[in-house]
Length: 198
Image 1 (cartoon, rainbow, N blue to C red):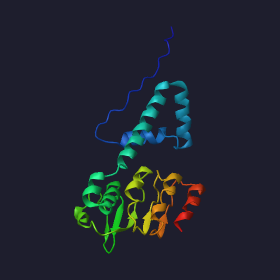
Image 2: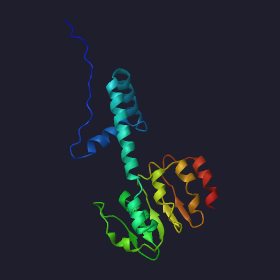
Image 3: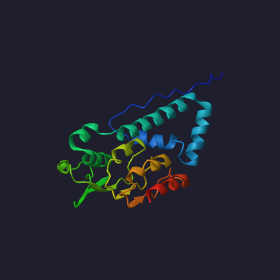
Image 4: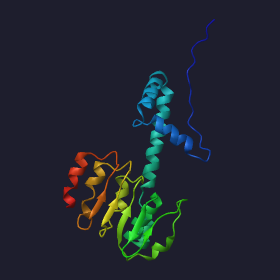
């Protein structure tokens, strides 16, 4: 006797304090993954509806996490002003900032940083290094008020795209250096819209 075919039922992953497993799985299931991962995903999705639901769940969770990281810190902006709020946003992302006439401020390896910069409310931010950060279109709201910003490094930012570049025009009067090396979502169209910066 042959047994009737059984369907595969996958449950949503349960968080156990770490993200290594989910991050690794989302990399395989993400559309921009390698060819072998896409082929495996397509094979499984053709046969099991639950795999597609798991993929959608993980992608939604990933997008939600990026959006949460890019939320504005309105309380800090109201209390300390746009320079401190922009610096706090970048430092929370894991980037670095330099206030005019000051040394670079960076988070340590655990992501912690000194809050001494809260006293620099009247000192403009002149450089931001957001290389490798999860900054996106929404997150630029925290940087656009930095009218004296001279250098902006967005190298290897996976969520910076052509739409983000189109928002940089308020910085045209001060921005002297912009680095976009390694941003996978930036195309020639996005680079063409930078003409308004020079």
